[in-house]
Length: 483
Ligand code: BG6
Image (cartoon, rainbow, N blue to C red):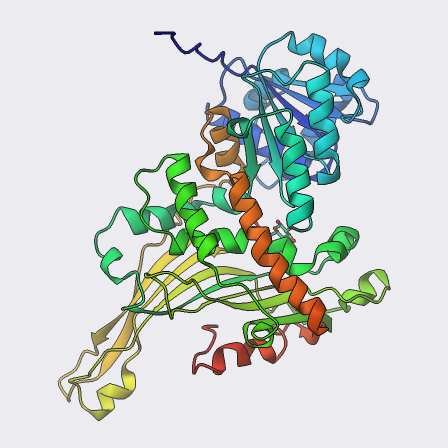
């Protein structure tokens, strides 16, 4: 029997777009912190590639000054080790001719290529890497959202990437999957027996997923105005969170087992139609208002142009399968909301019958599991308890909290993801079929909005979105849990 050829360890991490924001704010700091913790392979070199012509020394100095802007500061010993790994090559990623010097440096060793570039360059970069002979069998490629603007464009990008790298070597980042509490959600569900018997339509009334931001769109207006909240946040981060809550227990924690289960959820999502669009979706766009005590301008005033793009979206999703039939999943996300909060709430059903008297009855609140992803990291279960005292029975709600804040440095989500790419573990990355199924669902919503002429409704910056966002829940006698 032929033995499988052992893979050579990765020697190079090449960051295309090395002078951009993602590299400076997320990737290089993450690598620095991993190095500080002794988690990077000793032989790993980090090579920056971008069009700007500069020498290695300048790139190293620039990286250091960006790291120094962070509250953690830079440790001299760690920096000495980390900077020795750094190198820089000026090149146009989309042109094979520019990649010769890089090819000579790699000398046939396997590399990870991180495309911190505009998705419009993914195809050309993969083709250039392949033409330059740099897409070897052990090489891996990392790409980020947005992979396309709709299903069709996403398929085109995925096909171009696939012509140079087979799917097993493609790592599609959704940085939410690198967040600590997201991984804790998986542990909570599958390392405890308590929740599974209740994790279904017999005990769960509904689920709420909120990603609220106080920031406006600001400098990212050009990008954002092409995408809007539906494509920027729901297609990826929110649907990933929904999948992790709703999926069946996978056979194991392996990448394909988990991703197969997420795919089943995406296939079960009920499609939006012209008949249901008004009942299941709300679009909003912020006007001027006050956030964190400061006056802020309207979305359209940030760049001074009229726009029909939503900066807020709320949706009622239905998962048509045995586990979740009849349990709505409410999602909302927006810019310029009153607070920064990413939270998942599993709202359980009320008691079928209360044995307590009328006064205690008023105190009863249905159990609720709240998973806070940011800014605080916490999982808490709201339970009813008896109020202390001898004068009759009164009840009170008590949160049972598994606070995840150990006082240590909070890791950047990219640290975990970069470590997983180095370890060749794709479990926390998004497979091609997941991306495409998510787009198919999003396209239905976007197309019905356009067919019905549903335009974003205004909301004041600093509020929780347009009134329709409240009506979305109130129609079924529910409310957003805002406290
Ligand atoms: C990005 C979106 O993917 O996620 C941004 O493009 C958004 O618009 C950001 O602000 C939110 O990420 P986080 O980790 O700050 O919640």
